[in-house]
Image: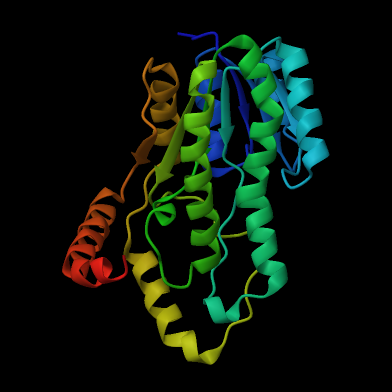
Length: 268
């Protein structure tokens, strides 16, 4: 059954973004679906319930134009899903300035531009739900994923602050932290130049990834509907696997801080 909500979703052409869009449209909601590629097939299937928009989220002016167009078309915006992003694999020593800046432009600055464009409309409505698609890698450091982790850790901090700032306007914020899904999210069309010193780590990572059973994006699509319908959504929520890893990492951090508390006190 339709909730009557209007969604604005970035990165809608594939993976989790496409699953979110399809789930919302399938129950009768309306969606502004943005992507770098044309999505005419969605219009053919769902008619005027979907507004396909070609958008590069790194272009601030284009983002503001797209959000304004979506609001004018539907008359309101209820759920903002910042999903557009990609993963860049490479050791910190291997990262070039171009690769690192592109990673941050898409995964961090893109969501910032969308939030800045949407907030005036949400504030005027007195309602809205901003969903920031982070990652388990936004909570723990993963070897050879320094650029991606940096972008998601930054998004996590920014979103936590955002939630505090907009609560008084009736706007809610949720950080979604997916684990491993069967998508091609680590295919951003760019890569760091490999150094042979990290080949052994690279091989181990590829072997591990090949052994992991990935989750179904369609299941995430159904989960986000429940999240959107919640009157009191969480600030953070895992999607799929990853909780056990994060819990262990956090336990280790607490133990380390406790073990070194005497040194910490000396620094006062």
